Image 1 (cartoon, chains in turn purple, red):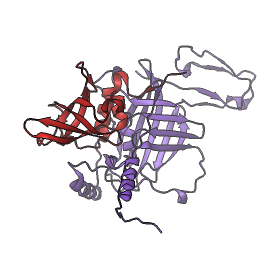
Image 2 (tube, chains in turn yellow, brown):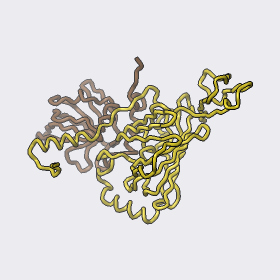
Image 3 (cartoon, helix red, strand yellow):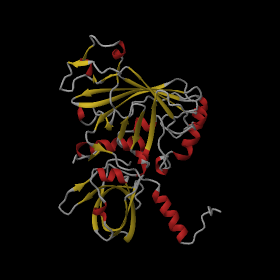
Image 4 (cartoon, each protein chain N blue to C red):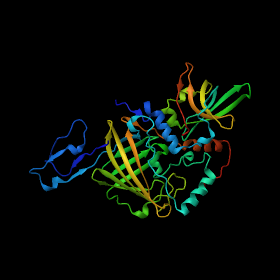
Length: 267
Length: 130
């Protein structure tokens, strides 16, 4: 059973008194707000859990054999998508050619569903939440509320553009501006959008994040694909830097130093 | 000072790495036989701890094929570290013993699964490519 964690944030209220906050880390739902003689503005209460931390793939009971690997169902592809994916797989299947082999990240939703094998770090601020997936240094910036970006300035990328909002103690993230990807476990077109609903809970003394996600795509998906991905906290854990492209640069330098012309001579 | 451990170390390391392997494998798992590990001894010629995967070249001598350099593939630098496999253990010129998942074709090469120490310990327990 997951106990949902929430944190009461009191807005514009210098006089609100709190009581009943359990010292055992129990749910913030147990908090009681005494609002007698408090101006109406002080009653604005928002529940926002703090996802800050380092996270790895959830394991039921903390033991082996119960991975929540990526929680995604098998996508039901349209004919257009099947043709494109088949063309890609025809030249890559059974080989070592994959995005990751060339230091290219998985892109959403695979970056999210695959995270936890390599850990994931979340840094949460009121107006922005940064999620770093260690593998391939994939970073998602989730802008909370009015981010102010002109859509014309947002380029399609493998991890897209993510806007978030709070619905009670759930963080709802909508990701758009995705690149077409046939090299993903979840192929999608640029018309795809992904909605994630993050919640925080406690299981067996561990903080656990659950993400219920759904991707829709009128061009590539005959029907939406959904999944549930869970992570457990690695208390005190840290990410390693995933330096990946430097060896390629060093190789280029070595070849240049050896007198080789490799086709990009500059001005 | 607060101690911050590497994510995925301790009891969860092998499990975490297995997931990484499954979810975002950089190598085709088909070319290596992880169910039939082989022990190889040799002298380190090259040891590259890199992402997305590492490389180890050993000078190996055996009766069947004589002396030659054999290249082995390895986990990413990050995952090697999480398995306890550190650059200092693979110094050029050192004689070492490793466990590998051999190639299915029987050709030289393979995928590093562990370093075997002189006192018989195995450092690392890699069960699939990453």
